[in-house]
Amino acid sequence: MEQKKYKQINTKTPEIQEMILSYQIGGVAYELSQRLEISPALALDLFYRSKTCAQLHDKRTGLYLMSNGYIADDFIYEKQKGY
Image: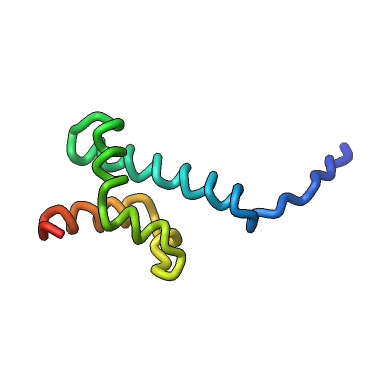
């Protein structure tokens, strides 16, 4: 059986990077909703308003390289400390 050849996609374009980040944010919101026993919509809203989310959007922090669980931990720590 012959393998199909797929066109290489440039994952470095701003559009693709935004899609990847949006997917990651959804995963973090889901993780938070499970841990905090709140709706995914509320978790997403709380996360979008956080410093952790701002850091996730800042490529210099490297936070985007971390797992959803790690980012959720960061968010919870931020809220516990009142930042």
